[in-house]
Image (tube, rainbow, N blue to C red; front, side, top):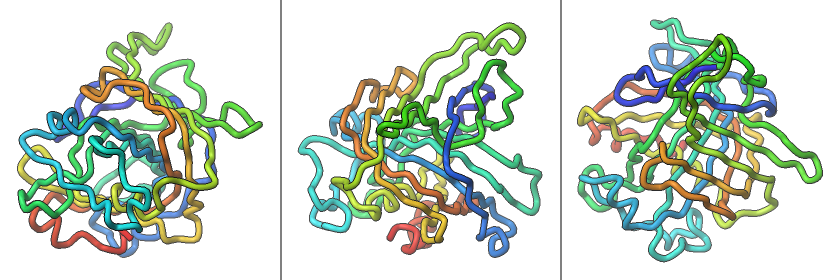
Length: 286
């Protein structure tokens, strides 16, 4: 199973995401209404990692960070650690991917590290997401030998209590004949289901669907709608490990709050950042 690290276009850097077990995938109910846009069912797990604000500021340069809306109890009911800024770490299994004008794979695996609440417009108030690392690739099980089933969003490794993992690996030199080749770890998560969270479901939905800053002066809306009956949302808590491919954020982060859910994503075409902000659907953020 090979992955490609994304920049403005997908590059030829192979990646590997080891994942094995998850709930069934959701139907793509938005394709009929967005025939010329990329739509998909996304079964994802998302973690909000508090990272030193000074470190995050360097990573998003030349942009600045917005002040977090910690006075909004629907987003940050317990505030946010002083001197920290949220970094969103996600891994997802995408299926039922549709776009009328393109032949798209039926399934894709993705992972990413991004910084929400980035001030792209310089107005001190409009939130965008700055992508630090994004990984995308096909879930076909044919590219690298010896990979466990790669058709789900995470792997269950224990039942009492249920414990889950995801692993994103950067394949520098593939070797499909006799082994996996040269591989570097990128992201590991090890987590449990949590009965409550320091954040709300709206917190995660808001951070997930903020417009993405592209590298060509444009931005892109990629909202995920978790309002269907199949969303099956659940809070998580666990450990997130970011390795050197994660850049300045490398480290082990314990007691990290997370969220797993299935939703339908709409990928809009690149547009001006002003347009992306003005047309962001508040329903996706709520």
